[in-house]
Amino acid sequence: MSSIQFAYARWATERLPLPNGKQVAELESRLGVAFPGDYRQYLLEFNGGTFDDPEILSPEEHFPRRGLSVMYGVASPFPGTELGEPWEINLFDNNDPLIALPIGGTSLGDLVILCMEVEDLGAVYFKQASGDWFRIAEGIVDFFATLREPNWG
Image (cartoon, rainbow, N blue to C red; front, side, top):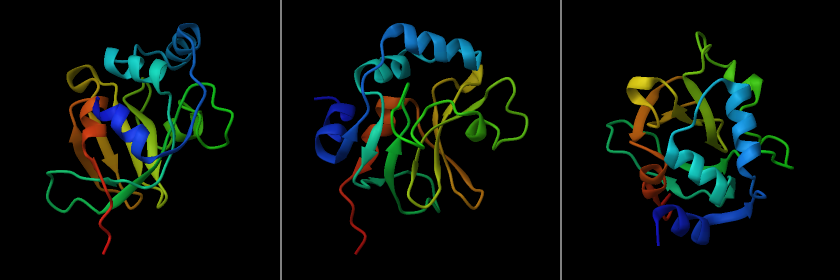
């Protein structure tokens, strides 16, 4: 079982309907990017959803303790879970062409970001609502491997 399959089986509370290849290609065209292969496959097989706040772990010092609450998806029927919304992309200065793509978040307003810059394509970052950035994974599979049972105590 992959880290993504495990995370969805253990913590997903609602899954988004799966898109087809054409819908993903249309989103890529609208955003002016080509998704990394592993992320594109993730969208086709899982496509986001809501989560029961599994803790996101990072080897970076001073990483905040946070739980994943949502992963955005293609053609989502639920408010606030659509991937590639202009208002989220426009949160970042100099994000045209697209470099930082918000792909998920926490209940505290933090964002999970997919890097679309060629040199770091597919890396996953965590952006605190208060401003700090953390590089947490090499790709989407590695990102899901960072999730753990919450131990907020």
